[in-house]
Length: 287
Image (cartoon, rainbow, N blue to C red; front, side, top):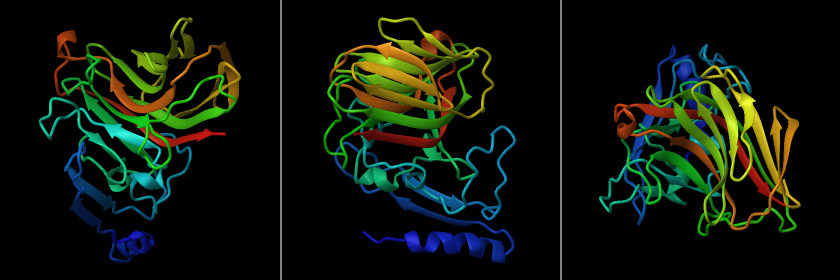
């Protein structure tokens, strides 16, 4: 596979030299079993050399014009992607795995934002759902490094399992404005979910009370969350301050992140209505 990474910094400079014209490229994602052939696109905006951010986003962290693909925002070889579509007509949502995921973008559901400082996850309420869910998703599922095997760990296995994310809920369905952005799942069901319902952002926990994050959240406001699991507990940090310690022992765990919309047309929402989450950072470690 050709490596074109050397031209990206030059492309931004070239765009400025020619008076703000855009530079774009479009290719087809390689096909593989269990993956999709949707178009992969990358476009350098006319203001690629500037550091401005659309007004609804907080400049945290600042945008970097050399980040032109999703892999520049966060590591992809520890994930697989589920999409709310069934292009291969096998009756299941399409999945994109490594190595295809490394350079994959979908122009409708999984792509860079206009400022090139974040990744947009979008899921329509009328999308294709997984077997055990009534709701569609554009969501990453944690895999072992390299992306071949599914990740599986325990909250009391002698290791420390960490997820750090900087994200914003940016769009929710109208009739049922519920959306999930981050999960820990175990071998049976979700252990916790970071979600928004109307204007409340909270952590929903299996077998424990919800933990309120924001009472009156404004769509588009970025915040940082860190989840650490160790010694039979899950700890939650909000903007680098520990706010929760939850004693719970679970096995077969893995992280999930993206836009898992909690509505469908049966709830009264138009099938094209979407839920959207933008991630500026998504980092995991097991040590």
